[in-house]
Image 1 (cartoon, rainbow, N blue to C red):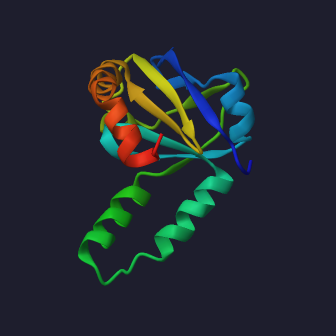
Image 2 (cartoon, rainbow, N blue to C red):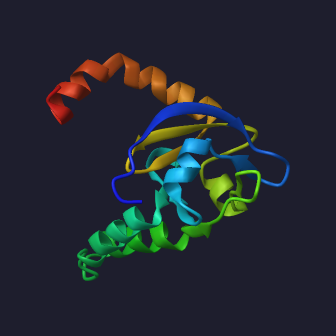
Length: 145
């Protein structure tokens, strides 16, 4: 869906098969199929197809003559996978992505605007502590809030 605005923080559990239930309102905005990819900061990025198409268009503008660009594109895209929730709203997170994000049992699912992020519970709690300490400074330097 165009213009999805994902917000919120939800604690969920991975089952023994590597499945996690996404929040219902997220599933609705993601549509029947979506993309899960390696994200930055050791989390996973989840994109609705329309947003993924925009990411792909941006990647096409990166010059392949630059080594860093090739490395980034190669690593980012090789880990991406199409996902589809089952009838209970659970999605399988492939083992390679679970390993990358160090997902074990408890995970946080975050709405961050045009995408969703999936974090290991402990990693998100540690990251969030650091972000809380510098939130005002970040707002001024990045968002002008």
